[in-house]
Image (cartoon, rainbow, N blue to C red; front, side, top):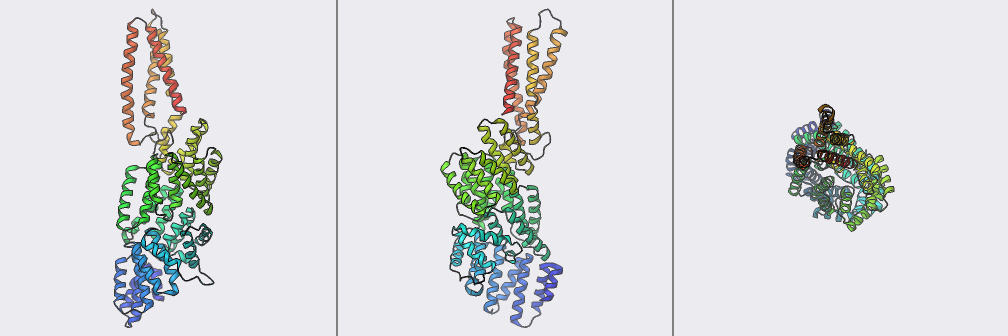
Length: 587
């Protein structure tokens, strides 16, 4: 065993597996040989060599196994199934091990619950695991962390929020070996308890341990967890980088991709075609692998995408589907999407019911993320929301979630604008725009008036166009045109060209020329970047049609001999255009 440990230290899990497999072949005693084969299979699983590990387990089971080795083989089959074929099969193996190994039954039942939660809370295997855990032997007088976790988890799944403090305390010890092979459960619980910072701490510790240990199974899982935390925090570039590394490792080892963070990033980006294609792909895969939890995440991502695009009816239905099975994590993720969508759709009863449930869980969790989102959802339902909006902004700023902080500013700005507090509304919406653009949440950025969806702030992007809106010269240009027309209307009949026509004409050309450029540019603000050409073409077409009609009317007036009235009419049109430009920019 010491030689195997040295091999692992020098060459990782793959080196240990190769050493143990060779040692098993050279071992004459059948009992010792089976033990080494199973040890080699465990090392193969850590290295991500699932097919080779399954072959070794089958070869060990070909011999008559004593009870302890038979249980060990079942546990290894469960681990292989969990990472390779699907967690549903793993639940059966773990329940079988719990029946045959009473001394460690509670630990096996905890692992069965982890596998079940990954499948779906309503799956038959999960229900059997939960029923068995309720009837598990009592914990010893000095319970281990695993014993406490099992009892607290069962209580929480049965609806007892008094179990939250115990769950948070157990999760907080990120160095506990308990979490080494239970990262999926740790991630789900951390998100369910509204603590993405804790989820990131657990993932960082697991990542460091996996790199040191050479575990090519745990490493990508920890990177996917880190990516999810980065996405929830609003650091989408970091999330994308982590996903790329994790996916590369998974493509080599054969570990199935954990799609949770991929879906979160795609939904927040708000690029409809890209996000909907990924959601459809993941939903199909979830059906094939019987992973209802993954389906819930896909529905949640659809809700985020739709709320970001202001398609609240679609978001409401997607959020309802995400919450239908009560999967872990959905309280913190999908419930706020449902409340906001319900408010926007006028479904007040549903919004209040969802808010009541959200409020209870947020109070139990007690994190700034939870309490900030609760304040924001409460503000959406309140007739006097100002204090709740301020609380939401303050708490979400502390929480570190730039996505939710931006959403708080966005909803606050919309309410201020509805209350005709235009100056305050512009400031709140501007802050939301800048935050959304910084993190790359293009869909939400387009919900704030006067923004585009691009992240960069160049002259042709959302931020650049938004700055041009605030400093637009369009009203000034129309005023120049108005002054020109007024001057022409006052020109004497016997005046000279230089004195009566050249000056006003130059002023009109300069003013209208600048106005046309501004109008064409501003026409694409707030719409998808790919539609800017269509918007510019529409402006040109309407300008030509309007110009032709206006010219025909004014020419008819002038033909009647009243040139002054014709130019006065043109001045009036230009003045109205200037006023409308100012009103539009202020809104």
